[in-house]
Image (cartoon, rainbow, N blue to C red; front, side):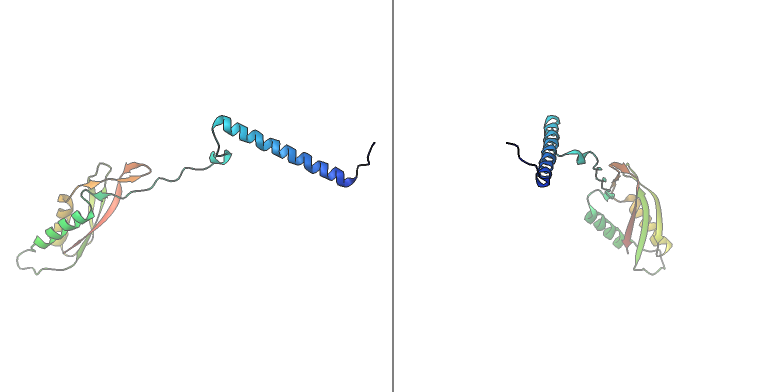
Length: 149
């Protein structure tokens, strides 16, 4: 017995066929991922790697040890004969090279020449530095240091 096909039946058949094709495509993708071991899907391929963090140089022994050294040395500093002592800060700027040595030592905010020279001496003779890391490698990075007298 032949039945008459209506437009509703045709629409239902088309939807069923479309769902069947979608299900077949998904199962092929799942099977391919299981064969290659990639269960995360194709979006992982286009995901960029996160940027490597930059680590600033640090004094060997830590910042508290550096501060203790600077405080001890500044307290022992005596200005020249006939000069009155000053209270204040000297700001230094320098580069910590990839090998941990400092270079380009400059006074960017000073008190008086003898105080500036003493601050430069303390920085040169102070603790060594661990180099900073940029782009995953040791790098020359700038640092600032404040010495209080």
